[in-house]
Image (cartoon, rainbow, N blue to C red; front, side, top):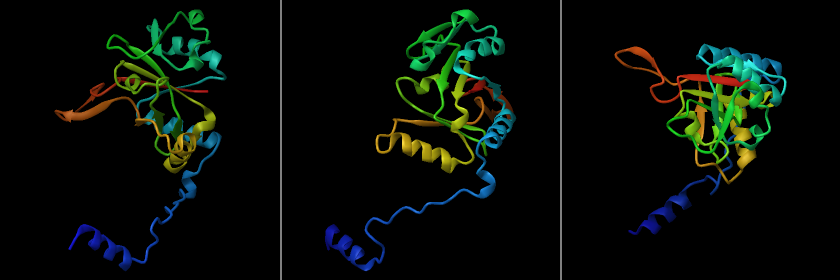
Length: 203
């Protein structure tokens, strides 16, 4: 009996449609927290995981806010065009554009979405936001828009599907706090697999 014969018999015996529509599972009501409630919940859950949260009124305020939060930073690696016109020199910071290098100590990315229920950031890889930014430098800064902080993972995945449809990025990273592990002698070690510090700027 050939493979095609076996598969034909299976198809004939099944009562399911050839391409069943995927079931849509709505998030529980307690996780659907739009607006200020979602932002507050995201902040609380991210801070529990060790992230530093700063809130700014607009993008122009980002350089000064970062200079106050990480005063030792003299250079920041970035590559998203939205950062190019910011007043970095006024904050005493030199922006470095391009791919991350092993010598970079601070990198700045933009998140696609943030999940309030877990304090998780969703980053889609691209030339503007290389995934290496989330792994090489000691400090990773992530900018997230207030409007893109959603209640549940289902909402974040909806943003991902809407933004990219069938042309998905090569990788999508879900970041919940700075890198840490308890595998080494049962002690919590920071920076084992990535940045020691995560800073989230909410704009």
